[in-house]
Length: 324
Length: 314
Image 1 (cartoon, chains in turn brown, blue):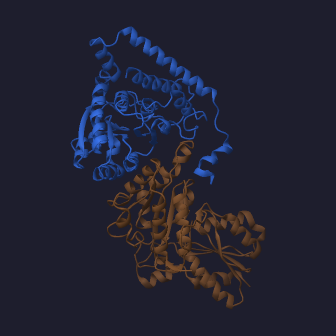
Image 2 (cartoon, one colour):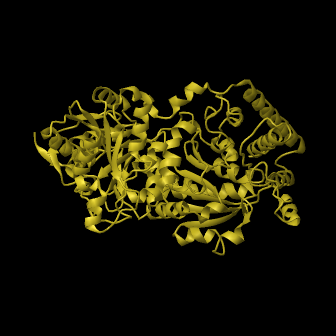
Image 3 (cartoon, each protein chain N blue to C red):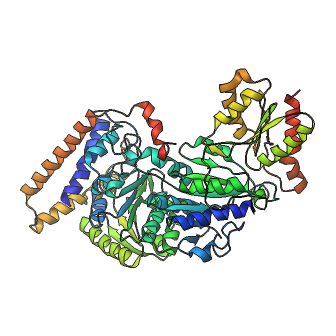
């Protein structure tokens, strides 16, 4: 199968959906003339014109609010927020408006919109351009949260997100944009809320989130050489969370490590750990481990940032602590 | 016009009674008493399929846009027979898309970017319909107001931006909160045509809206309408509003929009006192019936609630 970068896979999903449905429009900062800061929207302004590929002022709340309004008017907007760190600026529109409209209107309204964003941990962007804060959105029923780890999943999940009838927060990883992988030609969807077992194994289950899926796979390879069989699950969507796939795996392996680029306290790992403990306590042979970032803001200094981030070595260390 | 203004007035008076005298209603409720001329004049000047985006002080806009009083009252009671099935409450009874009463938000300033998006959607779909968004003087100091109004201006969106300046944001008077000499200047600062309207005169509001609506419809241009008015009561139903000078309140009560309108109709001999009395009676009955309707309903079963979180039953 042909290979595409993660960025081009996303671009292909946007393009195919725009060709398929005239209601799909894009809006965001620098997505048109500049082709997108990460070139995900490259060439789309030329192909679809300024009505459907709209450069916006630097107004994250208005970008998100306009996307909400567009969705209410029957469009399928895909808005881009350049860095995940800018989400707090549009939190009202995303969390308090979009996610609650279905419910508080008693089912009268629907908000089919996608908010694309990315986090740049590992790219020396400092404390205000690198954060990964997916667990905030676990507290937001009504929102879906999607985090692709491969070019293949990026395309299929974005296609599904655009076709979904609900607001979807679509979180890309800045470090992955240039990574390549096999991507099928033409349209395909990957259902939201279904995790993917990226590697089969028997001794320990690793749940990876976004970029950390790759770190987990690389750790699994090394561990295999040491005689430890690792199962790697890519969570793919955090909301809805596919707990069943994790439980099925843990019931076989009896050991669980969760690997994620967020700060450890109150992070994604905390929720998954609690849910597994609640539902499969009797199956566990060891404490549930979390590999995540320490509880500090993200340092700029490149060597410090490398020490700060989860990586394959840290995953191996965590597995070593609970296996054997 | 008289019918709609009376409907809002009597609905709100009934709500106040149900809260304060009968103790049947609880929760926040922000009454529209004294501002009836704005919702009535503005919405009567719109077409049926034009869309409104209002706020938590939205009972008036809902009723003016023909959300049935029965459904509104049932919503206030938290009954599944309400327009939002009791899941929204007072602050969201302006949500009834069936009649173009598209949305009502409880976060100050947040409706403006949403109105921009709805207007852009209508424009892209080549609809002739436009959007009217309503908010109070408090909203003009929020970031979402400025981001939203700027976007409306820069994209030339067919939005009528109504600031209902009722002089107080909760208890804070405009002059202590707004730095510019007037709110209208903020519309002009974004290059939007701006009109200052007597918000207690329903005819003025109607005429101003009619002109603005045509401009939005024909040329896809927004208008900023600052409607000067006054809350007859406090911020919410439990607020007595006693931070306001007595003479100021008295002065404004003389300009009660319904008194002003009745007086004018009688002077011009367009209505008789008998006709007015009859209208009041009819409306009062409609309100009493809405309470009966609301009381007859029941709340949604708790287990059903989860079906309203996601569309498509995810």
